[in-house]
Image 1 (cartoon, rainbow, N blue to C red):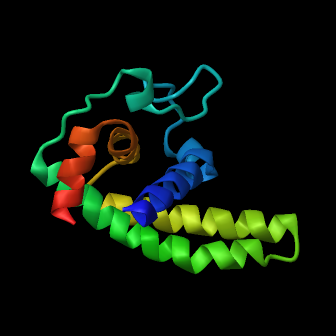
Image 2 (image 1 turned 90 degrees about the vertical axis):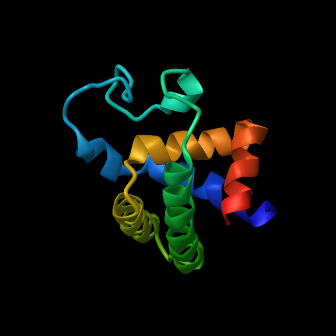
Length: 132
């Protein structure tokens, strides 16, 4: 479970910080801040925090793929010989993570909201752990 918590934190950090999200929508919606950056709807209280089993199963599926990407890219990023190379690797990892999440049937805000709920709500954590 500790590995899942760590990978969730890394995944959310990579996704929230990545430029791929900024390119997703040119319109400013409820999941964006006034400056156009991404904000977490679950943390701001604007996203539901109760999820059905189908959504949580999609989250578990996405998380598995994200763990693989994280494992593949973390060492590459740490060993990059320049800041530019590290940023490019992070962007590549981000793009792959976004694809994995979308291929699992979730959108990015929902994935991040479930990840936040996993970290902050024991009931969600217990349900996700039971599905793993």
